[in-house]
Image (cartoon, rainbow, N blue to C red):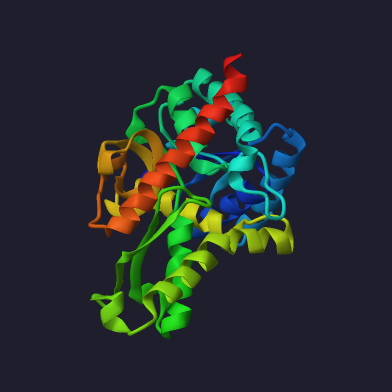
Length: 316
């Protein structure tokens, strides 16, 4: 399916994630216009200039440092601005700092007249997604968090290495929070159409615990080594943008407002969602084990508690 017209993506936050996402979007040739916005205009201008130099050797696109007025005309606004974690610092630990940044960005974006799809990639992403939803007053299907898409890719990658197959041969998702309470849903894993326990005989409890731990801690290991993550999350951002712009109706595990799935309401977390040009078209509820459902409910409780704690200073 071809992409028609001068489709524009705005990236709010020109740091490591924002700049890398811009680069990946340019190489993927998803849109003809990419505008970078940052509280530091000099940084945004430098990154845009660097990207434009690379674009001379890629497919034509207009890349520039702009304003929220430029973002208002975008089909998708990607919000990467937020507080960074350091070392083993949890994503939830930066919620208050990120909230102030995200609220400020969303307020400026909406004041400029934005009416597209808002994609949140700032951590802790599930909480920033619900804050952006409430602040923007956009329809819930139009505010999406990158959620556990990257975690699910890490699960596939980790399983592939252990099973000796290509990552693309594995289906399976991580659900719930993009963080320490995430749920590696092994009941959803299929290898060539076979359930995991049919594909190979393993010490199910021990092996699955090791895999889930490796997936959950992958981001921390990267941050400890290089100070931040960028390539993985940038690629997840590009994949979500691609599905939306191409109206693919693909199923991806992203963070969205739950409305009763597994009895969970009023919180954003990741479940498999059908995505298209209008954003989230349908939220799916996979057949999970009792233990996985328990973990998902616990993840929702963790997020609600963190949201309530973060809102107390803002309500004063």
